[in-house]
Length: 318
Image 1 (cartoon, rainbow, N blue to C red):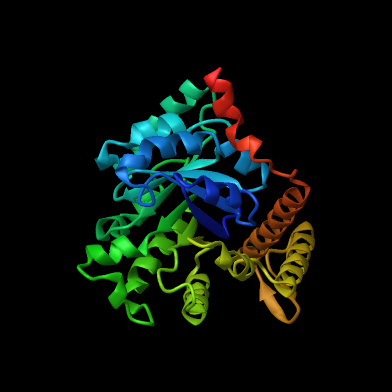
Image 2 (image 1 turned 120 degrees about the vertical axis):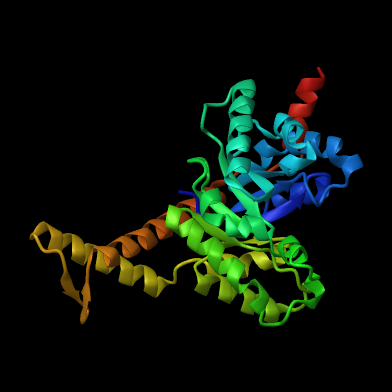
């Protein structure tokens, strides 16, 4: 399981932002070849992304590449450059149906072979950004065993409804159905749901906090981000508190002791707990452990020299 509390977008054509991203505390970095990169710059961005994956990975973050939608005809070329050692997965823009995920999975399989990677090593995060995609959330989440999370893109979704994101209400009531549908579809399959980037003003912290809190309450496990200033808050918000972790650990231990005595339910701190309570507690304990390991790896990560970002291009040019 990957902990994806925060997934930070970085334009694939900005070496300044890519090198900075390698030093940040995001659970995942998404090197973007889609909306953040104008069509004339996509060729250059692919090369920069290819040469940056290893260096970013050494900083302790998971690395994903967001590829262009299948309908653009650009996906195969994105994969040709984006798939390589150190990559954790592919985010597919404008995912609308199960067939999109199945087609991408086949393309990834071929790209893995061409790159010498182990078959099945790369994961998929479908990005749902349309009304059709929201309706098909469950089918998308269950389309391939490569899918580890499903992400929501509110900007294009709201535009698909015929509205501009600038007219979104402060309560974001218009997005409630889509958010709930994506969370329910994802959780029914057993994968994570990742909330949309905050599309308001960077200075509007109150709205950002409100939106992130809502996402947590609805069942999202993390949030996409477009600015590193949002990282610390999001990581804290989607991390279990010390009290939650302690309670869950004690509950899991109590239930395991009860099971050893042949009991299916037991009283714990004044409440009856059963197998579902145990599974939820165990999942939370596992998440706490994964977060701790990730932070430890990040602390031990070496100093990232700019040379790391250009090493592969220098080798390939010889």
